[in-house]
Amino acid sequence: MYALSAAGVALVMAMTAAGPTVLHDRVAVASERVVAAPAPDAPIGDVDLTDVPMEGTALPPRADVAAAKARQRRVGAAATAAAAAPVTGFRTTGFTLRDVPAALLPYANEKITPRVDPGVHDATGVRMFVVNGQLYNHPVAQAQYGLINMNAYRLTKDRFYLDRAGLQAQRLIDTRVESAGAWWYPYDFDFAVHGDTAHLLTAPWYSDMAQGQALSLYVMLFEATGASAWKAAADATFLSLSLDVDPAQPWGSWVDSSGNLWLEEYPRLPAANSERVLNGHLFAAFGLFDYHRITAAPRAAELYDGALTTVLNTLPTGFRRPNWASLYSLFHRIPSRNYHQVHISELLAVQRQTWDLRFARFAETLRADYPAPRFDRTLRFAAGDHTFRTFDTSGRITGTRYASFGRATAAPASHRQRIEGRGIFLRVSAGPYQGWWVAESRPARYLVGPLVVLSYLPGRWLTILPGAHSFYRYDANSRPTGSRNTTFAAPSGAPFTASAIVDGRLAVRVSAGPYTGYWLPVTSKVQLDSDQR
Image (cartoon, rainbow, N blue to C red; front, side, top):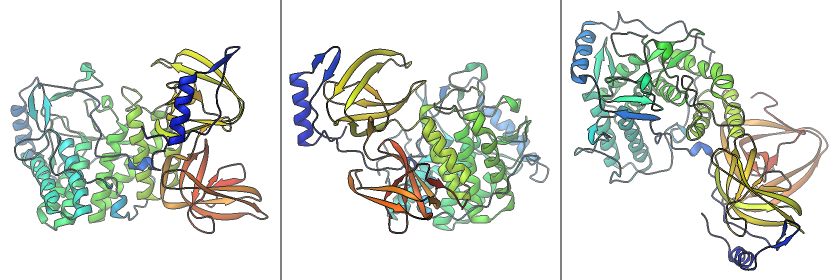
């Protein structure tokens, strides 16, 4: 939690020491201003896409993994790339792949990973995974740690990080299984998605998420070094994503009965029993995007187009759960509050890669369904009556208190969170109501400043209709720094590059013109994407 100001501390202590005066089961309290130093205005897009845990239970392998991989290698060596069946028959949309600055690619952020690795790794510095006390290679963990180190190299140009990324990539190459010219990265432990052992993935198994993230890593290494070995690894890994189901060999890509192309994180036979994981599907698609950046290969663009078309077809009525967290996958259909935020970040990345506003709007819809839940901010109360609640983990009400404030007041708050089936609630973090929740309802109760910020590239367009409009500005810590009230006699347009919940209502940040940097609340007189640009 962030510290209170001196005035805020004094008020909380006074309220706590004196206690409330109870009047007919309502509470009268002092109405001084309490200011909690808010969290910085950090976009949701800053979710670390290299820090996504596995959703399930890892188990020691039941089968002879070495024998199974040897058999796959023998069969795969006899097959040729020309004879391998490509994945076909999937629906596409016709997306245009756009240039994205290096700092805005999916795995880029401003974090520099420590030189001393805090994670599980072997003596050579390669990331590992522990199952029942035994170390295993973990393709996604190794690819992600490689990507983390490539990001650190981008920021520092320190060769140490480039070399450590190369170690992760080389381990993937050294442990690969080849089939018809394609390189595959095996998991040597069994895995039960969501703990469901009835649909166990038995080692060796393969994952298009691992294939896609390994592909992104090879592309970045090739860009950084120009070494042909990394390009060759990228070529062979890309081939794996382009092949159809082969029950006798590793596979990951498949097409469902509706013509949707799946880049499968957890493939099972028959293919229709595969998990259909949204986040893993998009991570694999990012690998295709990265490969297209260095090759302009039409097949990479086609597969990427098919993967995004699947998202268009399945997210609105498949993965989305209105007013709650989205589903992790379509097979087990379990909502995931953590991966919900990853989905939002991935959709914003896709908007940057395609300039297609549908993905930005999907991100906004998911934000409204289940916003990121923790923000240390000031909670403002209007004068009047307020109801405080407590809930159990199922969202059932376990306590109720009532308060009546004679004038506007404020308190520190730690959370803005959707309670399933009840709406958005705000959690008081200090004073006599510490731990109690109140329903968000502007102007009665809201948190100050921009929250759950979504950033867009390229910028979008808004039209301001005639009438009175108010613009608000905040500093880097979301403290109000000014406002402007303007009456427009005629329609006016402006670009915007971000949206957020600002003082309890949806607003957009103007990015050019006389109101640059100001937040404009979205009302019936503000039209977004009015020119569809």
